[in-house]
Image 1 (cartoon, rainbow, N blue to C red):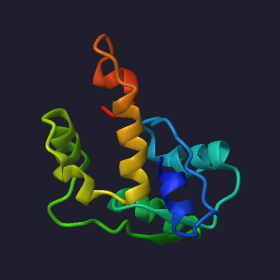
Image 2: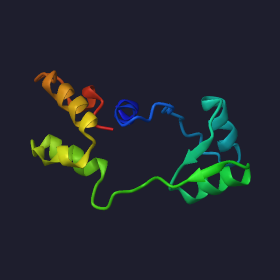
Image 3: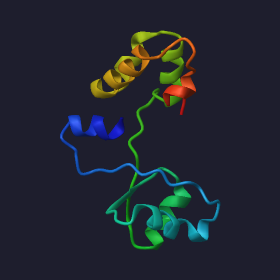
Length: 117
């Protein structure tokens, strides 16, 4: 969903990679490198992670945070059928979520759709 939304605005040289936490700061940078292989910039708002990557010579940028917008708020609005959530996400993201909700059946749970995380 993130990659599709970025591609819709002309950003197509991005890959989103899930990296499981190992709870070991000393090995974190190498652990990320094992999973990602090649990257130019690290985006994080975590001060510890920021420093770990800076110490290893990586370029680090903060993630832009929109005031008064959070994933929890958006999920809450979706769950409560408050369509104002669509104004809080990019159009492409809203369309992807709407499609997922359209195919959502009564026996599914929000977790089954992948929207709960």
